[in-house]
Amino acid sequence: MDDFYELMHLADSALPAGGYAFSSGLEGAYQLGLLGSPKALEEFVLSALTATAYGDIPFIHSAYAESDDKAIAEMLHFYDAMITAPAMRRASLTLGKNWLRLTADLYPHAGIVDLRRHMGQACWPVHYTAVFALTLKAAGFAQADVQQLFMFQTLRDQISAAVRLGVIGSMEATRRQLSLYPQCGRLLAETAGRPYAQASRCAPQIDIAQSVHDELYSRLFQS
Image (cartoon, rainbow, N blue to C red; front, side, top):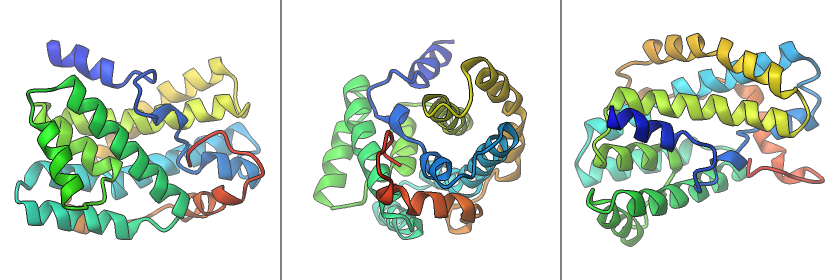
């Protein structure tokens, strides 16, 4: 039960890690005119969830499976090579550093301080997805719970970004978020047990949206 409360705490958008200001390309998609209807928004968010399941969840699985420094370093560099949009890469590294600092403070006896120091000394790319898994593994959370939390955060951030951009109202956003939870479960089941070497980029429209982020006249979000 204590783990349940802690997971709810980590899922809070008020957590000072910067996730609430992360749009994963939705802001770019809005400026490109790809979110002109509620149906288009739902399709974009579902694409983002699919991209998370196939492109990020395998790294969480491998972070739990690996303990060797060399293997973890290779995983982090593999993730770094998969990111094509500069804005996305910067956002991932910023969120990763923030998450490392936050969890080191929240769980002082989990060895995260040492992990943070080691990653800095080794000059590893501290990408958010892998760091998220490594720190919560060190804190003692189960892999299945961490994967669910990661999918929830992806969905939450997409929906909240859409509300802040005025694409959708709060009540409709709440209904749509609730309706997409079964899709999160389905995608996690589809990608269960995949190692990071089988991760894939499967949502080109999101990659395109992320690539235009730096060209936007004004920006609310990191990506």
